[in-house]
Image (cartoon, rainbow, N blue to C red; front, side, top):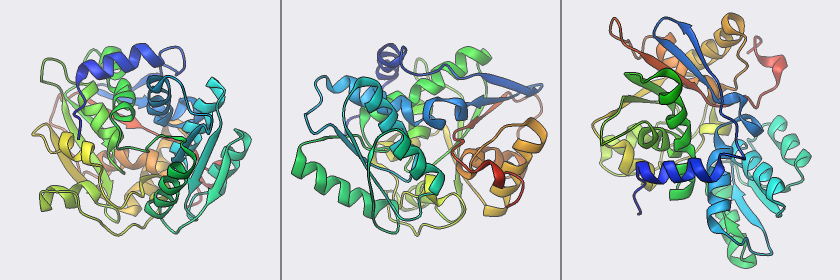
Length: 309
């Protein structure tokens, strides 16, 4: 597996700069910032990795690009493909929310909904890519994708002037891995608190086992954090001493999502609220004076459910 370096993230930032938004940072209280990545094109950070993978490839095959996704990655790939004028074929599992499926259609993607979980859709997408020759854009386990996601970390450090700790959600791990690399400079950087739902503990289980292992997938954030095994690249990066792995309950995620809306008017999907759930439920307790950033990573949700679930 090829490692991803800080220089790779810098190169990704230069490559995708004209295609993605520099999302804002909100200081919600002294020493606490939200990085509002849910305001990114396509509603999540995923578009950063999608653009970097596609643009780094150079000439895209006539068959276009293909991806498997719980929804957000597919939306990002479809958005990036439309922007550069290539065909996008997206495989999603049956648990993908109707909001995300509708978004894929609106972006002109060719959609196949198959399998009960992400990994089954990913198998179907890989088979299809082998048949057509389309460029695969993996949801989390490609160096270009991880480096693209890492540009979030670059921005965060510039916008805050540096923080002590960053809380970030984990599904397949590509985003947290990218943020870990993107916030580092000269081999050092802030503590990374990698937050997972208790019902999808891919990183937590892998760190305990010493290698990526499959886990059961379920719960309120399964449509976005529903990878059944941590990515190899992510495991390599997130096994380091800077990273702390924590788990949050579905109840904490629901409460965090509601609080984001009611207190801050931040509209997030369940996965987007997972990192904040660790802070709000005291799973992670900052020390006095600690400078903390929470990445709000996605907003692809039905607004009518923000206060009702």
